[in-house]
Image: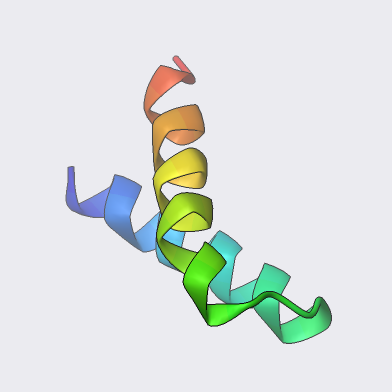
Length: 41
């Protein structure tokens, strides 16, 4: 589980460092990335 959180944080961090993302959209982005990663087997 910790790895999933780390991967999510890395992906979201890299994405927002290169793209303009409104603060209000961050929770949805984090949730979406986390959910997508949790489905990868």
